[in-house]
Length: 135
Image (cartoon, rainbow, N blue to C red; front, side):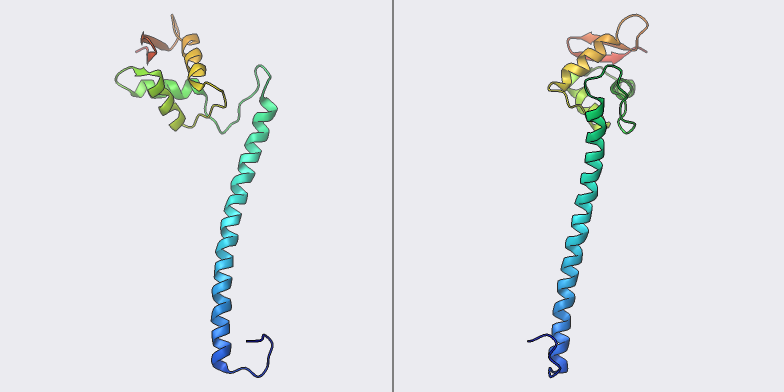
């Protein structure tokens, strides 16, 4: 059917209108999906820009959206009744919102725990690669 033809029947016009309405609905769904992806990418880029500015500098401020590794690890170990192996602890730390861009995030966690263990510090090593908090 030709668009703009004044000599079409009412039934053909209704059919064409339904077809166009369905196409519009499909396009609106695609636009909504594109908008979601676009907003997610903008968020990722804004976080990537913050971390790129903070890399390579001692004492660089961390993003306000990411909780501190030591705080999350302390909270998890405090809630646990038994000591956790470092791999189990890291799994729970990741679930708690900490993101590490290190090649070996377990090493980062291990170093943090070792530096914060001992007299007057919150973490305690119970056996090899197994940690708890002092009670």
